[in-house]
Image (cartoon, rainbow, N blue to C red; front, side, top):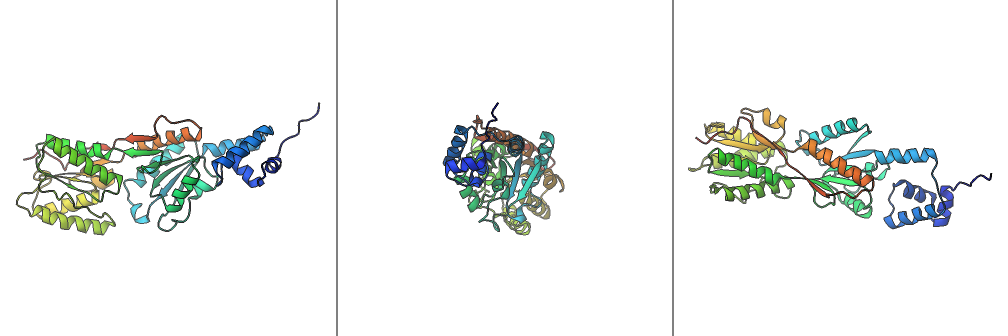
Length: 345
């Protein structure tokens, strides 16, 4: 019996009039090549009855099974973050449970704005979860490589993303305060350029209208910068000094950042305002931020566990070529009642 001649990458390259490297990238789903060229090369390979050897098939299978996590934000916003630290922890936990290699890359968008994360371009993964700010070069690369599986967090600029319902969480915070008898409430929040800050403003505004609360003491247009810790605390104290000096002050605060909540707590105690007897405080933050002060702060926090697991299954669908039922998956933040909220006296 005549042995069937095997088709090599070189043969496909000659037929497709491209380099061997381009053929390899197309067949393995790696590299920066367009979808049209990739499709043409794969069609040529099919017509030539190309069959990868066992080692290549195993390599491709391994490649397609690996995922990565890109953490992209300035260093000052990574340390102690109630967003990134839980994200990293639950990603490591997920990889261990799924039996896949854990790959995490830190990408500083300020320093590496002109670069694309290696987990996306180096053929190390079959897809990535992307947390944080997406730089200019990375946005361009994603646009030029639409077939590369990627799922983002809290970024509606991209097709597949996990979105937290901070508007719903803020609404429930105000609803709980209203049930405790609070009528005068105020919101301390940052610029609405971030999903969390925007969602908090939307939910708060809707809730005070529904429950007909008094927000005359709330400076609706004021937005905190929320940069480094020291400046945020200082700005929070200065704001609360003016707020608590008013003849008619709020009996409850909804605060979008745990640092501001600590500033409010400090200023309240300085003015002899007892928390929670005279003032209830509801904030956003993880367990470490909200339980390492006294009284412990009632809060909402990012549901990292659910977000990571839903992002993983969405990414896996994309990697396996399946069309996801939902492109934007919503996750509700976790609400925890602690010692800083009480019935209005």
